[in-house]
Length: 233
Length: 222
Length: 117
Image (cartoon, rainbow over all chains, first blue to last red):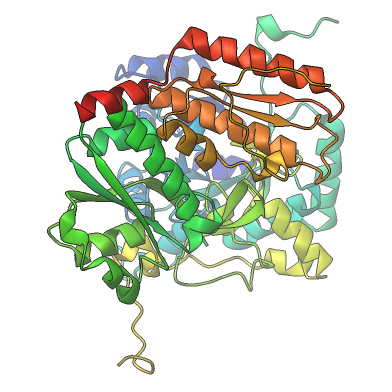
């Protein structure tokens, strides 16, 4: 895996070190301090900060704008992009927008169904799926072209990530699905939160058996439990 | 078939209340099979509406007819000689039939008596479910005969998403995950290796996105 | 058993209550019936397996519709009994008749008279 982009995260991961990222959800309002404060708190402990994209389909300040705030603080944001809300025109356009602010990391996701959010009656898009979004951003970066075939002046330089859920069903295609994302062009994987270590280890073993760990950086997801849900020990 | 569901009678009453002579037109095809707009439903609706308006002391004459189809000229023509006797038509056909009626009888107001839902199948009597969204570019050959466009809540061509649990979709535990079905069937057909082929970005121009569609067949056209 | 039951009731025989449709019930009201009740076999004892269960659903549909069009859903009811329960049949007839008397005549009749006048 030779370094392709100016991403700090990519450099850290390529060096063989343990990369650390933390997730930062944008606010349900326009106050940028909601982002910058969180970022200040964690900036000395992380290599990059993921900004979620209207997670659980609840309307929030957009991921791209929040990433720009981080970038202006000298941090390395990971732009999360879901394919739920935008068609291929808007996705490519936002990728260029992010690139214009020298945002170098992107995580390609399907996105939760809008039913879970504050606009369950809204239309969804799903013009591309997450697999195809990975292909799209890699194509824009590596070929310097839009999906339509036209040339991009100053193509984006994105370190391209995808999600993996080692615990979802059907389990038998979890590894083939990971392989598919790698084949589509994913360079790093962020997993869902791991609460079941045994199953995660099984998943990692199968990943290693196929040699996928040599082809993609894998960041394991961890969420500290907040006090009200601490298990009683 | 095209699956429709009955409109609430309150909504129908509200649509037609200002008229005095109504023709309720059923359809013998899909809406008869899904028990929303056939001869029997026409009869029940007409009877209920007559009683409602009679009870309200409002003049309302309601006649009934059920045509073989409302999506073909020849059957719609059967009411040409009587259509002018009515203030309005309440059609219990699918959205296609209702519109064809409106196009043909340009001066007669036409109202929908059903909500047209989807193209689907009868799973059992009283349970119908969607199978096709008419995308105009069938991919069932690649997906083991199960359509992710009509049956996956995110229309994922490379699914499943991370929300698939115990074979069910993240939006409802009563809804099968289409990709679980696809994987199960690929396995059954000994084709699980096909799963790793990445489905290419879809050309949606043959779908709704491309605007209203036509099929023109010069070989059968007259 | 020469049991008596109210003579206001008109019996319509059907081979099975499964033959009774929503439309039959509605038409009866449209023609001025004050009440309609369907008497089927005991549930689980249908000779045609589920005729009486179908009837129960149709009676429920008719009830809902009659409520919505202002006739009153309580004017229609389903009863079940076995063929040996003659006294019960008479009891149900009395019960239904009393109920309908309390409700008064089908409002359609009044509306029709008004229209004619």
